[in-house]
Image (cartoon, rainbow, N blue to C red; front, side, top):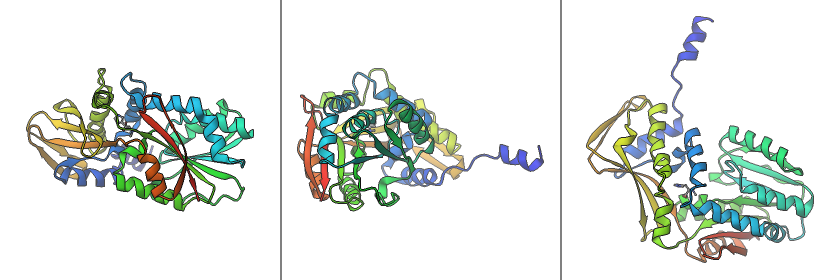
Length: 329
Ligand code: AVJ
């Protein structure tokens, strides 16, 4: 091995620019904050998968129940008799998506699935697994950030209708005005007859909401603190994760669950890669996530506001979660 090869292989990896910028801004803000997308490094993605299986975390289970019961009807209504292709925003592990893909194959024999994600490794895994497990599905992954809309998608020359899947209540991480803007951008990238299938968590009794984000096994607490472990690794920081308490609270005025990390003591943390020192007072918090919960009827109103005609809503018997279909005009 040459000297330069050794130098290259041992050089500290550059922190990703988006991470540095978000952390620098967020920890300088008052109150301090970090964006929720920082949760999803490899360990965080695994912890999130564990969250989805917790007894208290009703979201995934409830949405999966809706898709299990109604995927056929959802696909039929979206197709309106024409062939569909499915585009998924932030596909991740694409676990619940299989129910929709299987329904599309049943309806039309085969289907093209275009998962969009910023992680090329997650996409490659999803492609291999889905093509192996659901015959009739062809997967065409796109590495892209959908936050700015669907501009990266080439126009569809096949004559198929696009159905955009935005499930999992991911939209709940956005401020309502940002959510509205995202739906408008999606609408602008679609043709008349195309659709959007949106999964949204609904308002419900406070105890149920609080339990879902304060699970007894402490997985959500570990998920929240994992962001500090990520900063230790990627920004050469010296956070003591156990010196921060997990807090999840219901903010009724804003209709959202908030997650925070609360400094148990007065402490100074150094982030060497940013050449930054940050002081925390005892009890001071870092706001790490908002998870908005929508009132019944609000998802359909939001779709309509963005230019979609709401043509179907599926909810569970308790009214805890909604999957809504909007059609672009
Ligand atoms: C992936 C944004 C839907 O808000 O419930 C789970 C993330 N945070 N537990 C949610 C999350 C804490 C989740 N979303």
